[in-house]
Image (cartoon, rainbow, N blue to C red; front, side):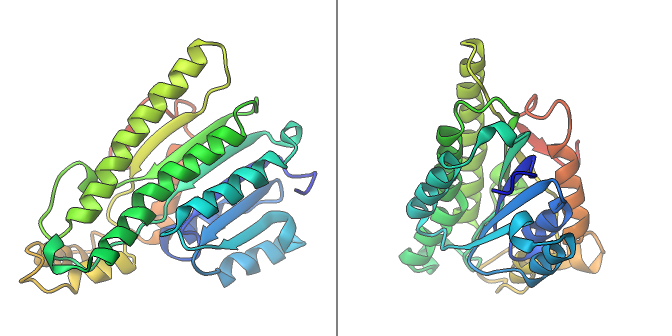
Length: 262
């Protein structure tokens, strides 16, 4: 790691959509952004080049988070190899998610359902565990921000897998926060954990929902209406709201949060 780096941000799903927008807004001369995605973002690479030597400010790991174990092991080992004395803060943003085409679970291939749950929930669990294990003795502030959804807090027909993943993420975050509070009570370094619903964002996922077969997805018209009524935030707008929550001095005091209530 560049010895001038003071802050470290790790983001999954950083090659497009809101994840890319978050990474773009985080890139700065005193920060290293590590993006973990299936693809690479040229916009991120260009922005890093504008700051100087791109590799000093940006790393892009191409990885398939439907097989999250080797990715988590790589991240753990990479963090262990870093020198924590020069790092002023660490944040993990679990943003990657995979939505199966809307419809009841019996209408989707089993392998597709498995991949969606692995990307959206198992990867969050394993990457969080890897980061917390590797940095257990780091004295700098550490924050874990899990990008959840309103669908983790209310069910919707045609999206059972996604609802399950986000509900699991919410309760995972609650339990992790309790573990970190226990560490703090023992006088050990502790991280702060938040599961955040980011609002309704104009991404490829929204296109998929409003273009779905209404016979398989009863709420298709609702999502089409969001677009028609101009109720969708741009990825850049949503990213700014997410980062405002991440930067709050009381981050972690409310584990389940929503940008519309922040």
